[in-house]
Image (tube, rainbow, N blue to C red; front, side, top):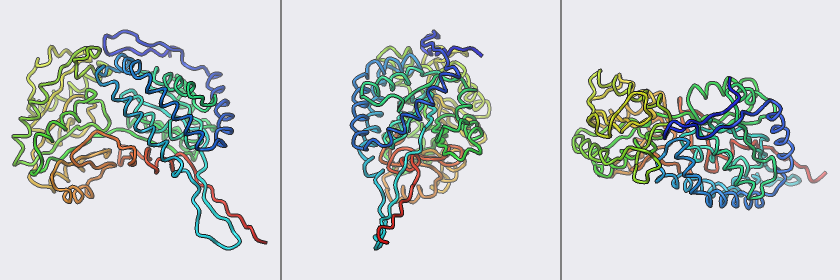
Length: 463
């Protein structure tokens, strides 16, 4: 195995970043430093933690132009959208800082004469964060910032596709005056990542990535009795009811399907539309899709860039071809977005109709710019189809009837249920999934429960 990490840019195939993988000695040193730093950090008042983390967010936001450029070259997002990820990080981080005081406060139980009793939220120790490339800051901030606010030390292993993101975090925390060792990062190969998960010094693993990756994390942590948070992806559905605002729904769902070139764990991958508005919806969705501009993501006019690598694009091409061979119809004519060549990461968006659940495009995660649309005749049929999936991260309904949205939402197996929106994380709400979408929770006050352990104090004050 090579001792170098190489990030090959999907923009032009060049090597954009090259770093040495950490040695065994370097890994051990980082762990030892984290242990020492966390012992001191957990005694730091939450108000002081908040001041430091707020300064870190300020430093991060001030660097937004450089961050946007780095995202474009590392993973291919159009430069025009880079600032959006910075804004999302700021929103989530500031919210988790703001609620930390109440979420982490001691929980006092009913008074009892002669006793003082309360439950304290004790930090776990060292939190190992393993982050993906598709939203490299938005996914990782969900665990990094709350873990530090809760009194833990963090070791970050970022994707080999987006290694500079770890370094950006380190610079922001250093500028903010975070004590050395509370946040550190390592560039690790797969074997060393697995070994670190098994290390007795690691107290929690927060992983975002694929289902096979989640299986590896769980297997590595088996028998260690430590917490493991897994956010593994989805095949997120949407249901457009007969009473929906058709144009609003179509435009919103096209954006939910194709933003970030479809490389979003909570992006829309299958759409169910009531038969009474189906034709109108499909026409508007197609019209909206044709407005995209595929090209070099460094061009500010480009609205859809390359997939992260050519093999990912070829996977989507094959999934689409298989669906068409099985009877699906492609609504975007070949060549609409320029030459579509096997082996290229550049792939235009595609809508498929006449699809069904026997096709992989409606059952297996695509993680690219393709979406299938099916006609349904009732709420019951839509519920059955939405639940017919191994995943359950988010799902959305588009309707004018809030009561119906609540009723239907109760019957859909999902971590988040949206009405008239999609592909968004509200930091005040728990981010979680069911089935193969993983387990655990980040964000909201509940997110802090996974980064701390309850410690009961039972003090007899009268003898």
